[in-house]
Image 1 (cartoon, rainbow, N blue to C red):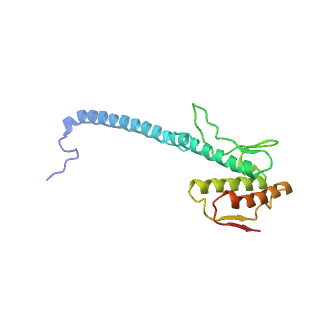
Image 2 (image 1 turned 45 degrees about the vertical axis):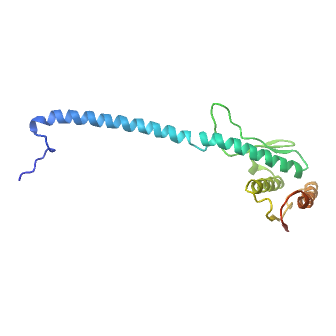
Image 3 (image 1 turned 120 degrees about the vertical axis):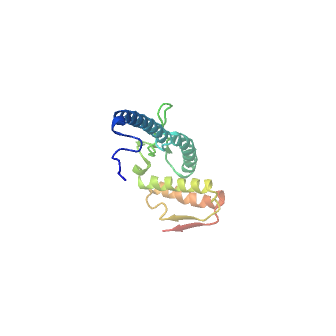
Length: 178
């Protein structure tokens, strides 16, 4: 039994035709793969949490969450302190997950750049709103080193906040550690 060096059904005379047909077939397959790659790239871009449909959906939720945080902050902080909404224009959504904070004297580019006292009250607002959204508003709340980074006026307001929380929320316990 002799083994042919050509694919089944191909002989020396049919090689030029086979090569041409094979080249056309490969060319079509490459074109299909290129189209699939474009479709997948578009799909990945559309679903991106940074600039796609997921980002668009998240923007509404995040801005509502920020509104609720600002309500908590307003009740708890002496000076003007507002977390601004995610800024999105209609043509290009891009969430970078940084949040500008408006204070009495300046715009702080991100929450992480606020003073320690401001971050402490922002963290409290985040925890309070998150607990409410998760249905945990009756659970104990821990305040560790609460108000230690605040000036005297804000420390007084923070103590008032603790006193008011026992009357204005459903938390079963407030635990304060210093």
